[in-house]
Length: 515
Ligand code: DHE
Image (tube, rainbow, N blue to C red; front, side, top):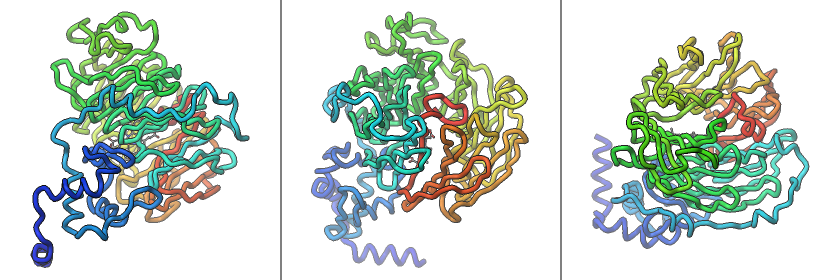
């Protein structure tokens, strides 16, 4: 009743808006920075796909009050409540057509700030270059470069809006690459602590992968439906690959991964029952001559004929998201769309080789591999079930379900520890971190470093001796633990620190972390 009265009062005091009011307000107050087409300019794109992590009431607050530490001013004094709401509804409305973001737009967006040929050969600071952490702080869209030994920051710089996915390193650990949800790829030099180049590869981007030889980047987009290959040196675009399925339908990219032993990128697709493999070696054989192999059809014409990169199309029995690979990269595990099971695809024979019993939406991308009694196991959290599943990688049977305090997002371990650290941040007890003994497969410790605050995403230092954990709040913290005693070592204030990425663990493809 109260709600009805409130709505009626609002109707009485708020004049009805004309249907073209929201676009007019957008053109007047927002278009200069966010682009008349809402695709972004100096401000981020304002499309539902890009705003997915921001709830509407939060967006209203940003319009009224602005965003601290950015160029976004508050315009609450210029708009009434109905106008603010109309603007929010407008920017959460999908565009009528998929926007054009092809090679011309991509090329035109590229900014090279430093000529890579002029860079010094060695780090311009004193620290172990392989024990650095890149920390993504989405609270105010910054990145901190942290010395993993002294636990002090070497640099902190403004990033593009809403970085997402892991930061990726060049094979020597010198350069780090970021992807923003807005489509920006940034190349940063850790030796001189500066941005080298940036390029916008899409309107809404999923993630970026770096070839194991360091030569190429492959970015996957949700909007438009493309993959974009870049030269890693200065981010020169090499090829735009339209993501078109066997029957002509297009698809959003779910993620691109690097498969080092195969010298290829592997692509998970959201809207096609296919996965793609894109070899990048110079002698990649018939694929490079413009042909693709499809399990059902045999050899056929290339997906992107004539381009430097050609995709091998592998039909899958279901839509598969979120891949995890065995150490040979011959097998890719994917989670089925309905969240009830996992599937193992053999990339060599190009067909499903096993189904895994994994209900509760496994978050395979953050799984780990560990050895026990001479066998390899993988362990994964689930986004919708308070459990960690442990799978024998020889039989693909689930050998244990470890009950946790809630569903989790990230899991981490390291070759030099016998423990795995998990968060349970998808459930009610968001402030807990649980530690699993990988021998007994039991939880041996629960930490609550910041009661009541969302705590997640552990990452080990290069030696496996320290563990860094994020308190993912606007005024958050990074908390460092001793990996053996579980004692707290240090706290550092940070602005919603999300992911942190240790150079050594990433470039050596540690089995305890993501790649
Ligand atoms: Fe992520 C990685 C998908 C929401 C933080 N996330 C990834 C990857 C994929 C993915 C496919 C692997 C790509 C890579 O690292 O190159 N994420 C998704 C989703 O589908 C989902 C559930 C919905 C969406 O909005 O896209 C999602 N992710 C989130 C968040 O809400 C998180 C917690 C906060 C945020 O800023 O968006 C988040 N995702 C992360 C992080 C990684 C990531 C920190 C890298 C993990 C790592 O350690 O490598």
